[in-house]
Amino acid sequence: MPSYAERYRQSWRLQIAPDPSETRRVERWLATARVFLAAAALAAIRMDPTELGHSWAAYGLFVFYLANGILIMMLLRRRQQSTAAFRVLVHAGDIVWPALISIFAEGPRSPFFLFFFFVLAAAAYRWGLWETLGTAAAEVALLWMGGFVLLHGWLGPGGSPALRQFLGLRVNLPEFEPERLFMLSVYLIVMGLLLGYLAEQQKSLRAEKTVITRFLSRVRVEDGLTGTMQRIFQETAAMYGASRLLVASQESHSHRVFLGELNKASDGAFGEFRWLDSKPADASTYLDDFPGEVCHAASKKGRWFILALDRDGNPLPAADPSSISRVRDAQTFGSLITVAFLFGEEWRGRVFLFDPFWQGEKQEELRFLLNLVQQVGPAIYNVYLLHRLRRRAGAAERARVARELHDGAVQSLIAVEMQVDVLRRQAEAKRPISEELGRIQGLLREEVLKLRELMQQMKAIDVDAQRLLGVLSDAVERFQRETGISARFVTDVEELDMPQRVCREVLRIVQEGLVNVRKHSGARHALVRLGCSRDQWNLTIEDDGKGFPFAGRLNHDQMESVGKGPMIIKERVRLIAGELTVESTPGKGTRLEITLPREEVPHEF
Image 1 (tube, rainbow, N blue to C red):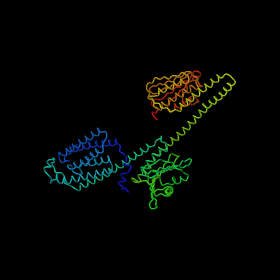
Image 2 (cartoon, rainbow, N blue to C red):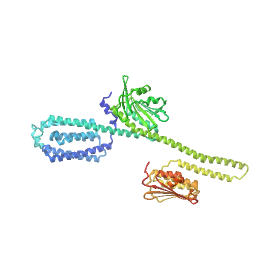
Image 3 (tube, rainbow, N blue to C red):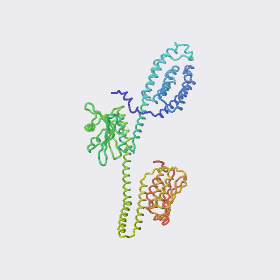
Image 4 (cartoon, rainbow, N blue to C red):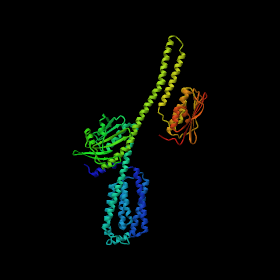
């Protein structure tokens, strides 16, 4: 079995790859703090030169440290990334510097004691607990070595006068004081432990957010519900080192139970998620009377040891192991983790991780799993809802197409079949059939146009601001070519800044307007115009047909109150926050005016 330290180092939280941009920003922050600290130290020396014993060597060290900080700052601004070797080299210099300055300062009561804290904070920012403690240990070792060898031996009162004269020391340095160095060492170790612990917790929080973001990125609508669940469950089982994963869920209305399983292959990777046969009794086995929202259970010498947390992540008192025993009767495992999920008011369920390998403190791992399910669960539920909505929309669309075909093409084909039978009889009686042939030809032409319009409505539209003007012009020209009605598209707009969603709806509105002109107006001419002002788009569709069964101008609300106007166009205009006005002159034509705001319409969906 691996030791606690080994398992700690292997924790999934520490396996999160660092963000290069974040590392570079941290190094820039530390470089700025280093220069500020050196400048502040020089200002303190100018105010009280006795802090350094009037040594020109100490002044030189401070100037060198300031220049070194400025150089590091310039390198970080010029380099696109900060390498690990560069960070270690800079950190080593930061460790050595406080030990050197402590030779000339007056012990732990000196204001330059802040340099020790800076290097500890730098280690905490860069890495974590163990690196910060190692930095504190290195500082303590250098302090004792410098205090014992240099102060007590070479630079103390009994030391070399030549060396003291070379360094410019005009007063005696403090005596070697083991008690003071011991207290300073304690301060550094305690501060290193504190800063390292805080940095480690912050690092864990960042890692948890990164993991949750990664899980959310696995939720993809195009993969469907099963594909999304497979991605999420594979990563969950791998993260907790489980040998197998089982999910049980129940639909609230039908009470039907669904079971799914994910097994680990011989190569250690997880295979495909598959659904299992289930029965109503599985609800009591896998879903009822479990302790807490999330719990861990392990069997030792015939006894169950259970750690359970409530919905807020708080530990619960000793729980009844009967629910765990029921799962043990159906599955083979030595330990398990189970966590509950709830999708709206429609689904409840649990995820079971069998024989997990713990990589950290159990309560924290359970709390994170609960948080993960609470945040990723709604995203999976949204995939389910969208999938169901698409199925319903597809069914509604298929029903509409079937109705259109039944009321249009099928009825017309039946009429053609009847007329062909009439023609056959007329041909046998040698009667003229040209008039009947003309009627059949006209009927077939009409149905061809209807089928083309139906296909156009079913076709997906990929149009944006750059293509809209050309697509509108082509649509109007095709309408004229296929119907024989004279039609023009006119615009004074050279460049569009219209959102893509609005472009799609504008094209659909023009298509629907032209269909209405062909079907209902009996017009000989049609005009489509697109213009713009500073705050709105203006779209008009007009014809010289028979018009609506009312005279005058009606806006959107007035048409809703009297139940008149083009229903589909009204709905599409409402979806893009536009205004529709219909001007009708019976026997002389119709004019549809649509205004769309340029700023209030959302830019993308």
